[in-house]
Image 1 (cartoon, rainbow, N blue to C red):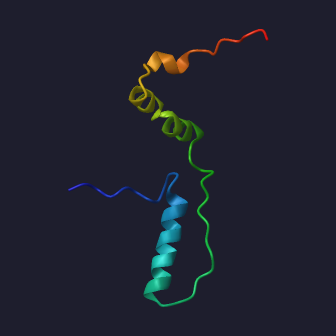
Image 2 (image 1 turned 90 degrees about the horizontal axis):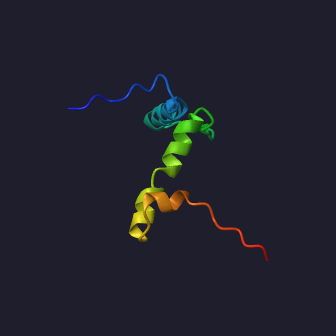
Image 3 (image 1 turned 120 degrees about the horizontal axis):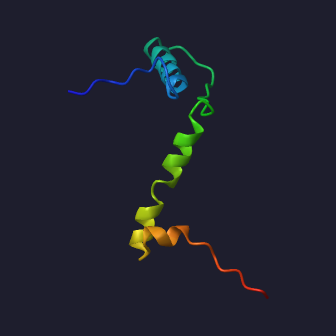
Length: 78
């Protein structure tokens, strides 16, 4: 059995709080105002790491090697 993550801290805290408020409103059959989960507390380096993690796999599916992804384009003097 896996332990559930602690939602008291971290980048997902605002989402967890919003979902708990939504669940309470549903259980009590009360109307609820709109709520927004802010993503600005997600660490930038993790965002960039996640965004760039799939490039080598996509390149391999298209016949490229990992080093091909880092090549600089040749500039032509036109």
